[in-house]
Length: 305
Image 1 (cartoon, rainbow, N blue to C red):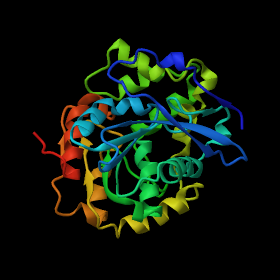
Image 2 (image 1 turned 90 degrees about the vertical axis):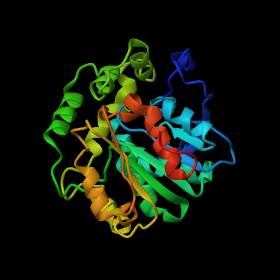
Image 3 (image 1 turned 180 degrees about the horizontal axis):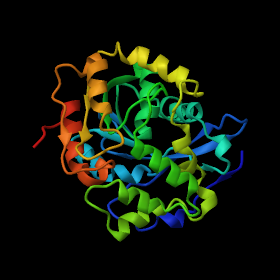
Image 4 (image 1 turned 135 degrees about the horizontal axis):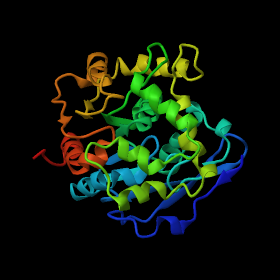
């Protein structure tokens, strides 16, 4: 497997992101290994929150969430998916699959970090991957926060706006990562923040991950990931541990999934599910501190102002 590793200097002087990266080697599924990156904040003996980002962001997305969680005494662990952030980037789109991304995160979180009694926080692809992990390893997780995400099986069509996004990513000669993130924010991005999202991707070859991820979302009943996702739903429909939906009020891509999760997952019942106002798809960027307070309160380490 041919990979690209973004030079460290690309990540110099990131605003509001003081945590030093940590690394782990995970099997690449092709006989070699990949280096995965993550950052941690908060006390090492605090309750663990696993923060998983999506397309086309990286752990930088969670910087405001992490600051709040750390202050509340939570051990916040934010991972860079393979192909994103400081993690290694396979250069061939064919090296990416839904199953491989699930296994890469599992190897990091379970085999390397050995996290237990975890609170999953998953947004976008972070939810797709994270919910699979929850369903396949339920003993490792204490609770779930689903934030602008879902777990499609291909049995129902995706929203038209998502198809527009997928087509734009597939056809773009130059994939403007910062612009994609800005388009998913309700409150806009300043130049420094956009630059931070561009930082992991110095050239087009390094963007195989962001380019391929939309094509890995199941959109038909015979998709390669459909069977495993259906099996995950079988578990989730019996999941009675706490399961919070913390969706924004301005995400046309995933908004319809919040009521579906609340209807089908038993662990959602009896909870006060917040709606993060004036926020888009990337609610961590628009309202990260607010989301952090919601998560901390859900874990029992604070209250929502």
